[in-house]
Length: 219
Ligand SMILES: [Ca+2]
Image 1 (tube, helix red, strand yellow):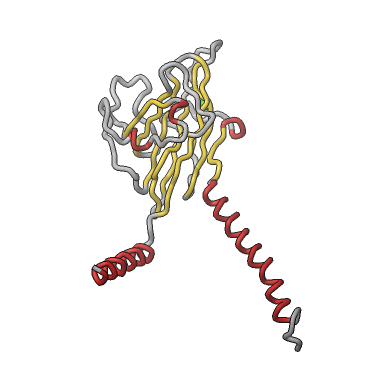
Image 2 (spheres, helix red, strand yellow):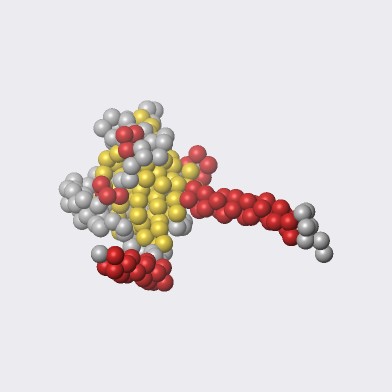
């Protein structure tokens, strides 16, 4: 075998470089897909979400970003208010960490309303005089694009129980409604995150202990 210049070993190295680059690109692409998440519901494609809190549309969420987009409001010519209700389950081993507001979310007037209730239904009626029975709620507008609504909703207000972020495994129901006349669009990313596995947590703890030991030794 010729191991000189351009011999098999050098050829191997030359071939390996593009392969390694390809593998790296594939990994980056895979990561990008995981970060990008998936569409859970787009009213423009999947149809109007349920108008009933007692029979909400059932959505399937997975770890990562779960996009939900739609419109709410009261059409100028129609009498019925378009409220959107849906339910989803946070599986065991996952945490509900954020409701990120994305473009083109736009509220009319004083803002749109979003509420969260524990369980598979919103049993609190839309004309409720208080937020009793809800985990939380908040008003949002285009000003919230780029922000996370979950910590705002977590603060007990007007009778809502309030909650700790992140929320754990279980079923939840969401109620979205525009407060003014007209049609408003929303686009949210409901983020689920895997609970850190004990092995990973132990590795972290081990790493931290090692760092602490190094620091003590160098002190
Ligand atoms: Ca709708």
